[in-house]
Every structure is written in structure tokens, then in C-alpha cells.
Length: 145
Image 1 (cartoon, rainbow, N blue to C red):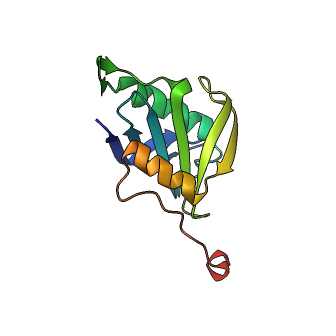
Image 2: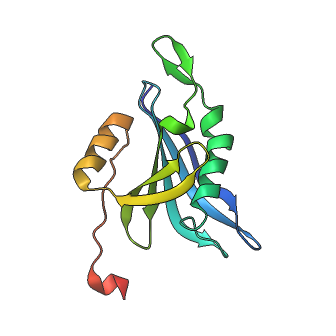
């Protein structure tokens, strides 16, 4: 199986102070045991953004979603592992996809972001069966004002 294995339009995560935030979560699999989590940030939070709470968001998605998936493979079923999961963040504010990496990919320590160029988005779309495909959305300067 290749394609989207999980979707939630409003996945709730805890804020740092009061109230919770919401993020759209899609989990894609490549049919070989690989997993890509797409966090689509619609800026639906009362106090803590997805970017500021990325460690908490990823840990919650890992434990409540990724670790519960059983992915069919040639030899049966496999569960994805956090250290083998690709984390991608899409920001509505920036209109850009970023790969989110961690110094410790199991405990989600020391996050870093790298913008993803369109050629790699095309590769990811193909590998994980993303339809209609991931597309960077160019931002006009007047849209940022």
C-alpha cells in the first residue's frame, strides 16, 4: 500500500499556557515501511504555534498515530519507527514546505527546518503517493504585507 494512511483535519495539541492548538495531519506511507508525516499549519492556535510546539506536536502524532499504524509490506506488516519517519511542515503564513529534522529523532530534541525545493517535493509526492502532489505556493510580496 502506498498513499495516505491517516488524515485528521483538526489534530489537537496542547498549548504552553491555556487552550489547545489544531493542526491538519496527513500520514503517507511508501509501501516499503517508510512514513512521511505532513503537518499542515493553518494557524489554528490560541497561544502556541505548531512551530513553537513542534516537539510536542511530533511526539503526540508519533504516539497517537504513527506508532499505531500497521503498514503492509511484502513479508507481512510493519510499524513505522520514529527515527525513520520524515516530518514535513507546511506553513500557511509562509506558503512553504519545510523538512523538520531533530538532533534526536526519537525524543524530538533540537528541531531544525529546511525549506524543500520543488524537485524534492515532486520526488516525495511520487515516493509516498501524494495526490495531486505537493506544490510550493509562491508568495507575492504584497501578500506578506
